[in-house]
Amino acid sequence: MRRTVYFISDSTGITAETIGNSILTQFEGVQFDKHRLPFTDDARKAEAAALRIKTLYAKTGERPIVVNTMTDPALCEIVAGSGALMLDVFAPFISPLEKELGAKRSGAVNLSHGMVDFEKYEARINATNFALTHDDGMDMDYAHADLILIGVSRSGKTPTCLYMALHYGVSAANYPLTDDDLDRLELPSRLLPYKDRLYGLTIEPQRLAQIREQRRAGSRYATLKQCNWELQQADKLMRHAGIPSLNTTHVSIEEIASKIFDRFGIERTMF
Image 1 (tube, rainbow, N blue to C red):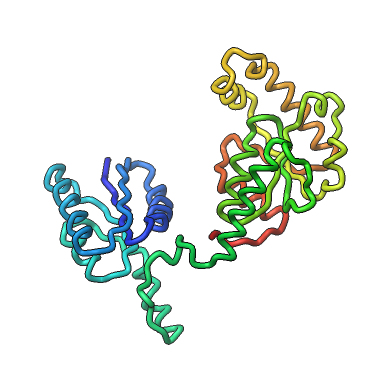
Image 2: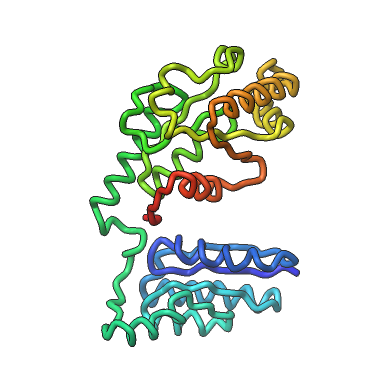
């Protein structure tokens, strides 16, 4: 089965897409063609979206699905005229909350992903800059690091640090274990004062070799033998030092971050 899904919003569409994708993953036997229509914030744009959806409906005979986060009921009604299945993300929550809080929703746009809280936004940007300057051991002043990821090259340290910084404002550094570190089976002396902030990332050798081959094709660095050796030594080093670790092979960045936060007791809300 194949169905078309539109994520429609009067703002960025990030909320509609995030929630929509979470729901759609529950239907493993269906393939979804996904389209995001952000900033549908006036009647003209809503009518254009409705026409696009209606045209597809007439062409395929399959009813499109709309995951909607538009706050203006009039715009929602225009899009609903397309005949699509309308899934309003906010509808199940607004009425009960209005009743509970004794207040009406504002209907304001772009509050979830806009620059509403400048202090939090600045914290996220500062954390992102921290992750970039402390990437791959470039800057080893870890005094202000919330946590430090260690592991062999290409085990997922950099993207995880950037994700935690950009979405949660966590100052995360990372250090790549070198051949010298792995030969000695000892943590570098610069890391010892921050041992309680260390967390290790590992990966399956075959996957690591595949990733490295894409980066440096035909190199010793990418051979399965080298990958096996590095990972075995890194595992011994982290076990000896008592550093908690996680195999990232089949785990998403979002899951990696959540597991790390849970380990360190870090409680941050997204955005």
